[in-house]
Length: 397
Ligand code: PLP
Image (cartoon, rainbow, N blue to C red; front, side):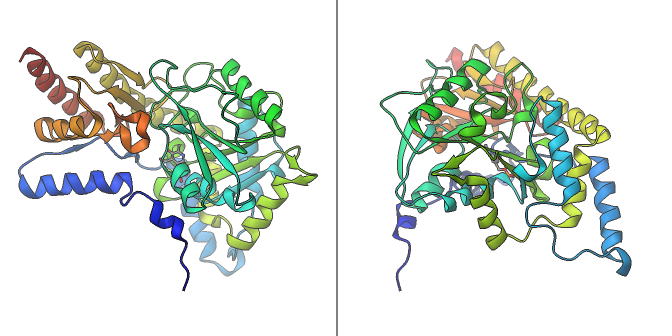
């Protein structure tokens, strides 16, 4: 048999698994340790009530002959697409329902979209960034080049004429750094993509966390309809990490040699995906109702309190950090001259706090760690107290 040898080029263990194993090993050796997890970007608040109610009603419908639903629509139920369309309208973006494809999540989408591109593409990936972009391109055997994000560019790399690619990944607000592009910077990327014939994969999974006037969709930039694909998700917006629902937007204007990329994506989806379940679709649509938006704003405000506690603690320690403002993540420059995994071990052993080492998101992430604001207030406060106690002592040594 012949396997896909590119899988052998992947790092042995996926970042979060390595973190989980280190934490489990530590717990085995120190069963008494009260470990606070601030590593994985999973949510902790339960689903918004409106989504629970809508899904409950949908379950009842499924249990009755008259209202039972079989396979869902491949590209999304009409009521869900309309809800997503109206969400876009609220942020000033006009999108037709047939330009939206509902899916089971943004992770799947950023991976699966590669199916519609040629095998010999070159992709430009920010470093550091959500590791799925890199791994999926390694799996596909694509040529990967990186745009370096660092303290100097505020973790927002800009187009560089020497780095031309067929596909440009942008993640804004960024996971892990929390940095978000403003209108002018994003426009430079759109202009660059149009000038070079590239397509931008725009991951807006954290758009709801934006607090300033950074664009919440790439389609707010003129010309993006001809060069961008947007990925979004209910995961962080509405706590759907375990429910699974996302959406991809491709405007009809995005073409290659007269072929609409939207049509290719739909062709791919109708062959390989059987649609978002009716129950989940009802829950997701409820999230974008007026009542739902109110509830999710409250949840996001709760997480924002956590990032505020974190940034206040780090400011009081004189630490350098990024993010936290437009994002549930705080990106901390490791103090005491430590590298990422070194500071990870330090936090685990001295504070019993788990963070995510920055280098797991790319080599430019070395020297940083990511802390997540998705925990509870109590745990976040406790973690920050421990870090303040240990680190202020440590500085004195
Ligand atoms: N995109 C980014 C940037 C993420 O950080 C994540 C999850 O952490 C995802 C996509 C995955 O979203 P989903 O849960 O919809 O698959």
